[in-house]
Image 1 (cartoon, helix red, strand yellow):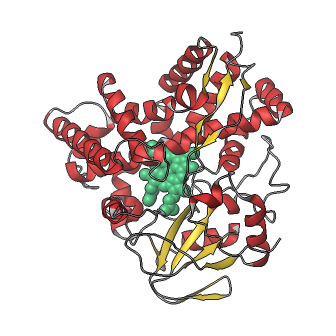
Image 2 (cartoon, helix red, strand yellow):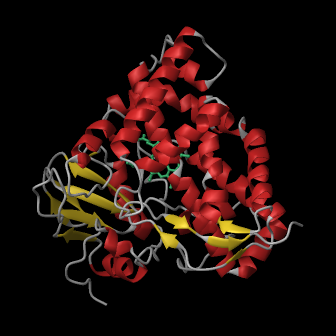
Length: 408
Ligand code: HEM
């Protein structure tokens, strides 16, 4: 197949049936750096197109050269017909996700302490108990929507645990979080920008409270003055919370949902998992899911990339969902293989300065959730096709009808 006319990798319709594997394979083979000519209906832009890189090597290259490929202009693909994206881009700029060096590292250094393997492992026992509870409750339901009843809960609880959000406030946080994503989706309810404001207000209040009345939690650490590293202002903290909720909830939820679908499509892998629980399974689930389809950068000067000249100001989209299926790196990439090792997938971004801060936490959540599913829901079955969220940015499922099976 040739790359079809009129394809736009930032248009949700390109992803209507999931990751377009044949199209991506063709891009990798014939045009690993490709000029995507259209950008229809994107508010705030008057450019005609952008570069797309689809191979593992080029996605790594762009991620690592962050002196040339800037995150400041906009990293997330937003397309909508109103003025909202501009405002959203402005809000994103307050977070580390959109900052360049040296501001990026300065901000990231303050929060890194909350995400070290040691800090994350400190949450293991509590999250394991929650995961088992979630699966046990689902087992009692008989049938239902796996996304809402099982996949979405642990990621949000983990972020709330990490931040020390009191139990009684969690529902609110969850609702706002759901309103913030899915702007392209016809079923989306609530205004995402209003939800952003609500979360920011809540987080601001939480930060101010902990500054006045310190507790033994990460919020207190982040907002109290630290001699060497500095501290987050309540405003910076508020944006950080928004970033955590957006970056950490849908992504992990979708790893869990796609992982379940992959297991049940490949019953021998499910049996193997239940028997051996190999530690390699988690990264294969995340590679397979590729929950974030792409991020973008903007060139700060003319440069060479994959044999083409990229001009200052040109945008470059990194297709993670293609890099993770690059046949020059992964043997039989379209085979779900939980023993795959090594597994240098780029689902958490390339190994540059912006590599996912929550990768350790996300891996732990996926591991604990599949442990719980294998323990409590070993006979779970899928009852019908999944309903996808309409999006060109997230590989997201909103409904997966399942029969939870009988309790063991
Ligand atoms: C950055 C994916 C889970 C917090 C990123 C990036 C990707 C990504 C691709 C790179 C962005 C870039 O290069 O511009 C994922 C996936 C996840 C996941 C696939 C789940 C499977 C989480 C979790 C958290 C989190 C659980 C936190 C609770 C962040 C933050 C950044 C980030 C704060 C920005 C890092 C920076 O700019 O330095 N994530 N993420 N993510 N992620 Fe994740």
